[in-house]
Image (tube, rainbow, N blue to C red):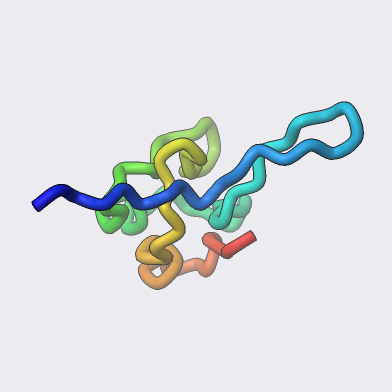
Length: 78
């Protein structure tokens, strides 16, 4: 049986002459880099940033698993 592809939780949209990426989950500056979300993400969409963890919009499928395990509430659907 073939696996059905899950569409990414982001989209490119045009706003005037500018293209912007919209994605479902973002990590705020409240992140303490504990790694709970990174370990939980089934798509390996969370990686290390300079001062906090970051979500890769090309990999995120908007499953919400990361949001539920964040001890500081730093991950929100956008």
